[in-house]
Length: 312
Ligand code: 0GY
Image (cartoon, rainbow, N blue to C red):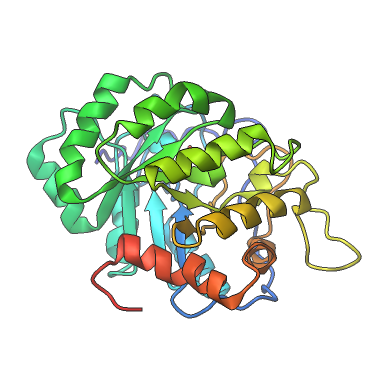
């Protein structure tokens, strides 16, 4: 972990950057006890954890204290902190958050193929349970398959998984590679479907068949990122992101035992609006329509993946 000197000037935020939502509302839906937020990040704080030189954006600060405050406000019990690309392969901020959570967090790291074996073991001991492979072109310069394959081989003996972030249009080109990886797979944000296309159309169906063929896990996350209709609450109801609902429902129906939920706080790179995290919680029962589905999505599934030694 690098620490800036006292004189290192802080980098300004990317122009037009939207900060995370201050004072999120109280959700109308009560998350069940033991809910896990399996997709959130920390940004810095920059003065303590400088951003990586190769980053594609400079965010506002969003550190562990704010993350834990949101966790407690929403009624979340545990977090999985996913390394954000603005920190490159310096996992310092993520690890600091995971350690500070005192057993209530796990981490997803970014590592290089030549990472020292002792460092891998130290990450494991700190609570890391996977690495993220990012294929979203605006976030990373390259994703060389030979390097990623080496990483996957090195983490497989630890029982870790690979978190895949890609755009749905790129799946046909990537799925052969994904299917060849030796670890469990976890897909971010339902594979980023184009929600203006039919939910039972060929693109989303292809994604679901990929999930089925590989026993992959799916994060039913980021309605705010996928939605075209946006956050407009309807008739004063706490409803938003209507166009994403059928996609979440279909994933839950087909893979009730391999779905995961998360907030994606502090919501990097949104450009049109910043979601009220309370409203995002109220999206959950619209997608997971039975208590049984909600228990699996929010508690049982993430516990099996991230805390397999604990009973729920
Ligand atoms: C997300 C989405 C994004 C960014 C990152 O690590 C990141 O920078 O994950 C994005 O810009 O779509 O999952 O938070």
